[in-house]
Image (cartoon, rainbow, N blue to C red):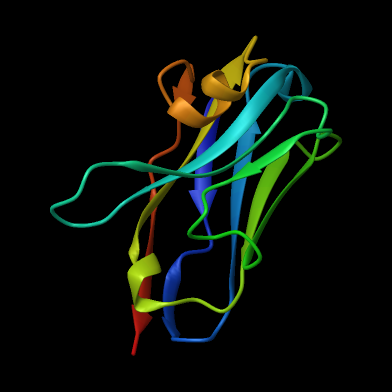
Length: 126
């Protein structure tokens, strides 16, 4: 699976962005999708994940109620709607896809994703 993340940019605090993750190469619907981010000088952290069926979603506490993850298997895309953005959300956001990820740990830890996109930069001005 090749993943192409897009949708990052500069936004004022309180604004919104929608990130997209376009997949190609294999049957996207079999893969769980996760979003992770990495701010300068910090380790990569989990943001959100969605199971292969879309039936389960997971969010980091820091983004609950503000971010929404979704997927459209017919279009081979995953999305992350980000509302009420804060300066602390500023980071490079990466999408990832993994096959056979069923447990909460698999989806949240980031250790078992098979494919990663190149990242898209989100900048939030205060």
